[in-house]
Amino acid sequence: MKTRLLSRLMTLALLCGISGSWAQETFKIGLILPMTGQSASTGKQIEAAARLYMAQNGSTVAGRKIELIVKDDGGVPDATKRIAQELVVNDKVGVLSGFGLTPLALATAPIATQSKTPMVVMAAATSSITEASPFIVRTSFTLPQCAVAMGDWAPKNGIKRVVTLVSDYGPGIDAERYFKERMQLNSAQVVESLRVPLRNPDFAPFLQKVRDLKPDALFVFVPSGAGAAVMKQFLERGMDKAGIKLIGTGDLTDDDQLNDMGDGALGVVTSHHYSAAHPSALNKKFVEAFKKANNGLRPNFMAVGGYDGMRVIYESLKNTKGGQGGGEAMLAAMKGQIFESPRGQIYIDAQTRDVVHNIYLRKVEKKDGQLYNVEFDVIKDMKDPGKSK
Ligand code: DHB
Image 1 (spheres, helix red, strand yellow):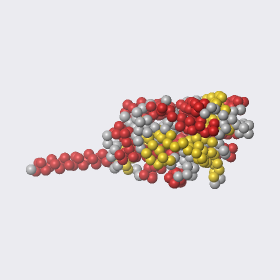
Image 2 (cartoon, rainbow, N blue to C red; image 1 turned 135 degrees about the vertical axis):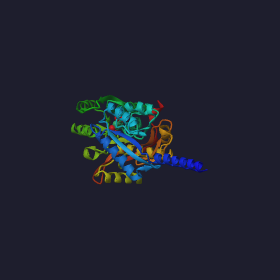
Image 3 (cartoon, rainbow, N blue to C red; image 1 turned 45 degrees about the vertical axis):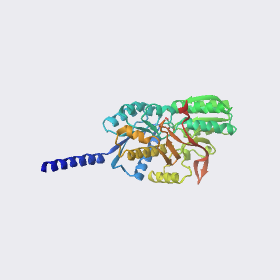
Image 4 (cartoon, rainbow, N blue to C red; image 1 turned 180 degrees about the vertical axis):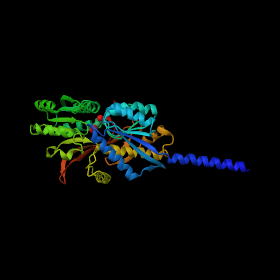
């Protein structure tokens, strides 16, 4: 009798011990970002947004303490891959996240697949990324979404002859291709497609060529952080005065840099999924809280990708009672999430694991003495056009 009671007590203690240690065990999120180098602003924005999300939503989810491990890959793919490996093997992270540039996400995809670790892409935006691993979920955007929106808007607004200028890698090539296809569909023309190197680009010789071609507009894609240099050289060459309009995806008039671009940026029309001026109550709260926590820094589209990525991870943890069932269960709980983001309504397509959201047409305007991308039209709930090819 006594021994039975004792053994029952021991079983109970063991069970409590196990569930206790499960609950106490921290859940680690690896956040790999370019904190140095050409894309350092992307790292800064995403880290700040992830920390804001945690400050607002608590650092314990489904009984598990969340630890965010931020690592700098300097924007170098080999470094991203090595760091991801270390995070999975040594730190035992439950989720990999971040990925400031397409090559960094692509380099890491095999690690997510092999280790069955969900990989939340918060920045990189080449269409094909989600196909590189079944464990990838994306909360940023895709270039085809923006390029198609602009390829519809421009011809309807008198822009018939365009030169494209893009950074020569995944997202630039997507932007060039989908913009051109859409222009042609709308009986308009891309007369020349120029590609500039991703690393340390010199835009001057390309812009000279554009001037000589005298198109109605120049369509630009450059990654976050490079837009101000394009704008400066475009204006210095008096291209606007020569009657050439500047259009592009919203990466060009990035909220991180826009206010320093000067009045020459006024009137530039771009297509994108997020503007700090998005007029929703939720976005106003987000922008205010982000600025307050970061010395007045304005959040850009990278910050929103990071903020929403944390939401996707938190909800997945809640729905799996703290990550029970491992990476596959967490991945399943990421698919199909629908929620209101600072950008508007967003949906993680369960089939493609890619983001479905509104794409806005925006014009740079001055509001309260500051430059903003002011939204004036919207294409609702746009899926990635790259997925149907
Ligand atoms: C990518 C990077 C950016 O900074 C951006 O604005 C868009 C796309 C990329 O590398 O995928």
